[in-house]
Length: 447
Ligand code: HEM
Ligand code: HEM
Ligand SMILES: [Fe+2]
Image 1 (cartoon, rainbow, N blue to C red):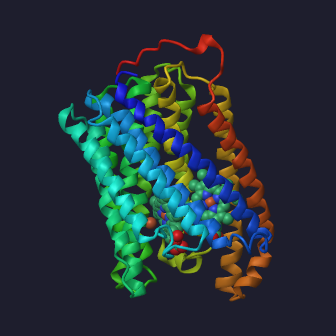
Image 2: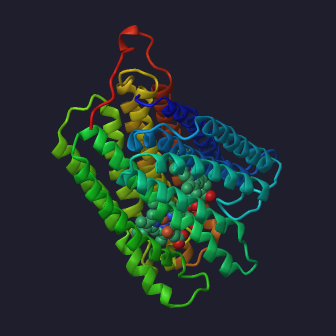
């Protein structure tokens, strides 16, 4: 570790991993309630369990990006973080806001509106946290070297915060409400978060493959352009049936289909860099997570997204288990794996060790990834059967749910596999081996 202030990233990484564990636990509880509907119904209703599952996901991913930024900005900008103290205060504020939101949910205090359920004071708290972060990181960027990686990352993080402001506007007209809701939800995951993904992968490729920065930066600009060109108008794929004008049909069809291209470009980018660089980086598991991230994001977002993005198909599949299948694999492949890649890469440096527990980490990779893939398949089967029975044959919703119960049991099975895999990953990252031999004075890799 070259810069002392990078250490603040540790808070964020550990905090993110703790919330990751909670997210998966609540996912498994939600999956259990799906097959045993009366379980917990008195103490913790399904909607609350689901809310904690999805909110913990979003919060830990954001916390991970904050940590990633605090880790990589000093290296990219070749200067210390503007104020490490502010970064630590920001961390605790964020954690307290997240904790308060969860306690509120348990007592039934929330605003509905999926993903944006946080009560107003918590939303304000989130904005304060974001402002502290943006001030601190922008000051760091301004005083240091400016690279494509740090510029793209910072622009993206600014837009993450700006787009969140739409969460404050909740018009009573349901069509307008949904229109703005997607400004946050879609423009995050298929817009600015994708830029975060491209820039962090670019950073990892520079560090781990030894390919020239100039080459990586050219790719980064291509990925950024493709993302913005397709992702912004791709929002149209959510405007088919909510009461927006008819031209959204073809805009949504054309541009969201093209959204597959940037995800494919990221796969080509990662594999090409590793092939071209060929440098034998000692952190094999970080390389595995980086390559795996690009591939699984391509399948989850690209392939499973395209599967239901054409309006002629979406007319039938809208809001079925097909959507849940896609939501799981896309979030896992793109953003969960991205965070685990940078955590796996950064933690050994932050703790002054050689890359450790690589075998266990890679076992975690394969078990978790296989579990998520199997879960996606079961939900896809459930979704296809559901679509046919409910939307084509017109069967009653609850009768259809009985017909697909077997798939929900299999989803629970794969969820338990994921829980085991995630335990391996967290153990591998947090608990280093005791042996003194692995404690080492490692130097930062040159670029
Ligand atoms: C990493 C990027 C992505 C993530 C994390 C993601 C996640 C999600 C989630 C969670 C939903 C459900 C939202 C809800 O209704 O509550 C959703 C819906 C949808 N996604 Fe994605 N997505 C991504 C990329 C894509 C791409 C690239 C496409 C198209 C090629 C796509 C197509 C769709 C469509 C059509 C829906 C609406 C499904 C419906 O009508 O029920 N997504 N996505
Ligand atoms: C890192 C892994 C995971 C990610 C990224 C993730 C993500 C998500 C997302 C985005 C949603 C909302 C889906 C939508 O709106 O379409 C969701 C809902 C849900 N998840 Fe997960 N999840 C993960 C792991 C799990 C696990 C291990 C289980 C256990 C079985 C699980 C069970 C559920 C259930 C039951 C729901 C509610 C579905 C519904 O309302 O029909 N998830 N999850
Ligand atoms: Fe979308």
